[in-house]
Every structure is written in C-alpha cells, then in structure tokens.
Image (cartoon, each protein chain N blue to C red):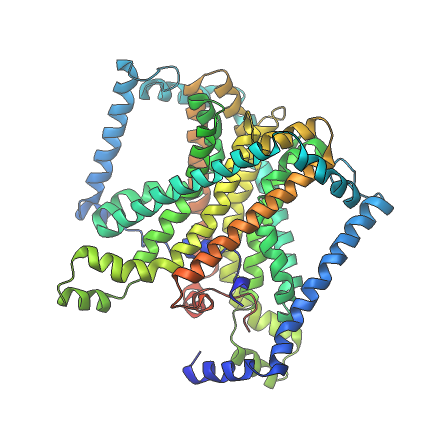
Length: 283
Length: 281
C-alpha cells in the first residue's frame, strides 16, 4: 500500500544534496567569482537604492546602517541574555524531543505489525501543522520558557520518531532470516541488526530535529513576548520600526542556524562513518 | 530485491490467506481510533487529569462544532486561509522548481549559488515574519509571501537533486539522437526527477500551511489563525479545538491530493520502489 509510504519522503529526498565543492575548486572553475560579484552587486544596490528614495529608508535601511545596527546589537547589554535564553531552550527541547522520538520509534517500530497499524496515525500527526498548538501551550504554561520548550518538543520529536521507525525496518528479510537461523534472540536482532542499520537514518532525523527545535522556540518567542529571546527581540524592534536592528537579529539567527547545521554535519559524518553503504542499500 | 523474488511475492500476496494477513494490521488501526477517543474522554471527562484550558472534553468539542462552523463569516475565514496556503504554495513551488531547473543546467551557477540557497534549509523562516509585516502589513499578501518563503526550499532542492538522477548513458543516447537540451530536459531528466520532486511538493505543502498559520498568529485581520486567537482570548477552548481539527483535515486533504497526483503523473513507477516503506520487511 503506497499510501503508507513514510510520511516525509521529501525530507529524505532533500538529503541527497548535490556535492559541495571546495573553495579551491570553486576559484579554479570561476564560480567563486560569480559568488563574489553577486555579493558585491547586492551590497551596492542595498546601499544605493534606499539613498535615492525609491523605497522607504525607514523600512529598508542602507547596508551601512544595517552594519552599524549589527555592531550596536552586539555591543548592547541585553543581547547575551536573549541569546542564552533562546539557545538553552533549543538545547533542552532538542534533547527531550530526540529522547521522546527515539523511544516512540523503538516502541512502535520494532514490530512490523504495529508499525503498519500505526502508520495512518503517523501520517495524521505529520499532516497536522503542530504550530496550531502554540497559543494553547502559551495559554496553559504561561509566557515563560516552559511553553517555548513544550512547543519545540512537539515540533521536533516527529522526524526522530519516523526516521527511527523507518530505520528499524531497513534490514532485508534475508538478514532477519539469517539471524533467526542462528537463534538470535529478539534483543540480539534489535541490537546487532536493526539498530546499527537504523542509526544513519536516525542521525538525519536528529539533525532535522535540531533545526525544528530552533524554529519552534523562535515561533513561541515571537508569539509570547515577555520572556525574551531572539524571536522577541526581532518582533519588538520591528514593531518600533527599528528595521536596522531587526535585520541584525535576523542575521544573528541565520548565522546560528547555518553554524548549527555545519556542526551537525561534521558530527554526523564522524558518528556514522558507515552511512554511505547503508544509504545505498536504502535505494 | 531480485526479479524472481518480486514475482514470487506478487504470487503469494494474491492468495486470500496472504491478503487477510496483510489486512490484519489495519484492523488494529481501526480499533485504535475508538481507543484513542476513549482515553481522551477518560482523561478529561472522568479523571479530569488534563486541564480543560489545554484539552476540553470530546463532548464539548462536538457541541462546539456547529457553533463554530455556523458562525457568520466562517466560510470567508476558511477561504482566506486556503487562499494564503494555495497562493504561497504556488508561488514558492514555482520559483523553487524554476530555480532548480536553472541551476541544474550549469555546474558553474550551481557551485556559485548553492551555498547561499542551502542556508535557507537551516534558517527558521518565521524569523522573517516581523519584517514582512513591517513591509507589507497585516494583509493577505504578507501571508502568501511567508508561506512561499517557507515552502520554496523543499521544492527547489528536490528539483535540483532529482534532475541530477538521470544516468549519463541515457543523456548520451539522447545526444547521439540529436535531441535538443530542451528535449533532454523534459523527456529524460524531468520524468526521472518527478518522484523526488513530488516528495518535495509534499514537504513544501506542509511547510506552506505552517508558514500561513504562523504569520496569521503573529498578526492578521482574518483567517483561521486569527479566529483561533480570538477563541483563545475568550477561553473558548472547545471552539479552538474545532479549528485544530479543521487544520488536521486541511493537512490530510492536501497530503492525499498530492499523493493522488503523484500516482497519476508517476504512473510508470510504483512509489514503493524509491520510498522507504514503513510496512516493508
């Protein structure tokens, strides 16, 4: 039954990134120059267009104004507090979400019978945009960090759950038969066959969960303003029409997000060195 | 799976006994629904273990349903949210698809711009919501833009990686037959990429819905998200849950529609071949 296909197939396809090239290769084939040229053109336009008055300078501050705001943000007293609040909420929610998702995946994914039975519900959980719960959680848990963490956990446990469930089903029927013919216990089948096969895929879910936890925390921070955090900061600057500072906060978020992904990529490569082989088998 | 194994499996799966065995898990699926309802009823109505501000009793949600759906202007709010989702999905999906095709044609462009565009994977796009509201206000255009930004990346990256899947030999064959670049693209590369692109569309539709809702929560003059905030501020949790179920229905309809379209357009290829199947094994 194809409807039962794992809910986020796209998420998996997303992971076949085209190969990234080294800086040296990019300079040699000329693409680095295109990159630099594009950045220069964007910066120049960003600087000139607001000055000419074609667009509102309040809403689109010039490049230099934005850089000045960025420096001002990094020099301000409140900035570290907001950053720590956001990042600690992300960290806590991520750990809880991963643990919860993995536990659910193991509980529901080890037996093919239960896995098949549970799949329509998994699809429903995936189809429900879980942010609809945000105002409800804020109303229940208040404006503090609890509601942020709760929302982020609800959003981020899902890929870990599904990837664990799918990963545990990856070994082929013959591999199961081999272990059964050797009188392996259920526990041995799980620990020696299913789990090692599943870990590369679970790691992908864990990485995805990190980004989703970040999103969940930011959403909650934008919606509930009193606890502070980067989301709150961006919203407050925007409502004061202090767009330079708003852009600066967005830049900080972008830098953090890209850094998180790069670190997660490196960790993933180190931990699951056997993953290429396992991914090849998946196809 | 070898070819014979596949045929053997087909043969086995057609016997009545095998069919019964295959259907057995779905009996559990059906049995689970009343069980979940029972647990919901037990924990809210009988044990009162869950605060009613978070999860009201099933009875009160059912009671609230005709009130919410029958309220004046409800149809307009639904229509508004659906327009935002559809508009954002169409805009973001079209840009993602075209950009994916553009970057797939030139390796130089790809290595020049892919690092920027990959950053979009990491960024929580909701952080842009305050900026979008400051730029274009609380109207429907901002919601469409937010949903488009949310779903762009999934469609873009699946298109790009899908278009790289065609085997060099197939392309060489087309070249030796003097096919134009256009023909190679639409007769070889796009058909091979379609299953992957549909995966991206599926994911993109989900994120477009999320983008539309979040931006309605942050500031809107109408739509289902706006309605939800109003119900919450009057502590009308049962009505709030009615809209949660409406969103669940919207999500499922979108999922099934794209799944159905995929079956129609990718008819030559069973989806189970390239998708890790939960029921495999």
